[in-house]
Length: 85
Image (tube, helix red, strand yellow):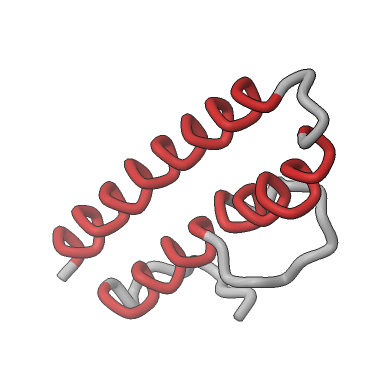
């Protein structure tokens, strides 16, 4: 069971890396454009909330860090990680 949890967490971590890259690319694509502040407010901020818990926005939505914890708790219940939700 623990091996399955590790494999799934690795998949989520890969998704996190790709999402972080996507956020960076979008930020670069709109830098200096009139739409930059709109994209930051309505797209980038939402993507950052999904990425991890370190986004700095007041948001308690499920994010990829919390998902890793949920996977661990479900597939490896002996692991003592806390789950906020």
